[in-house]
Length: 222
Image (cartoon, rainbow, N blue to C red; front, side, top):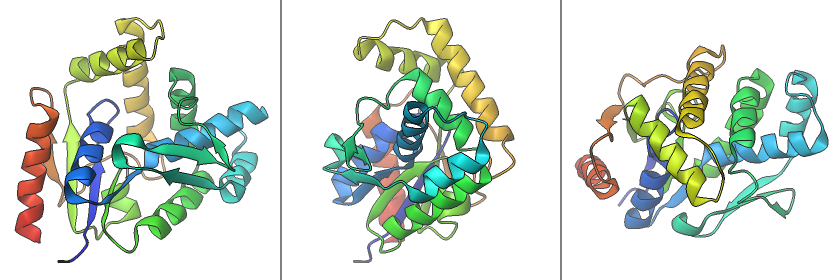
């Protein structure tokens, strides 16, 4: 059976990571969280004191940093230049920084090249913002996962609370709205649904229901 390249795109809070991990686990595929890669780079930029509008330095950082993802889909560890940043990158500050640096063309070129290298052999579930439109425009199966703004904001708020962070629902909503605007308006690889992507709204569905729907489409292809 052919090892497929499966792309999952969509806005923040749509459930891409949770669904992607479960889908990869059920298929026995490698799970690639490209958002974590941008977050790792953003974390390093913040730690290094690089201004988030310094495109030249951030591009060099993207070209010279080594980001690795290891472990099972449900226990993914994220490293940058050998340092485990799995927990450190999951903050609103790092998420906002990741959204800003991901709009820089040089940064995106470097990251896309690395993502293509990782996924080119197939057998991967890769999720992000431009997987089906730029990273792998010829992916075997493409999904666009979405959800209502209020649902996405509540999910993000609950994630932050689970990590012990004091964030209000309104703060989470504003962060999601700002992220949506940056993702959709950036000049390089803006967030959009690929013409051949299967649209799934996760607002009122469980993770398993979404995964089951995806599996049905995948089995049709393979």
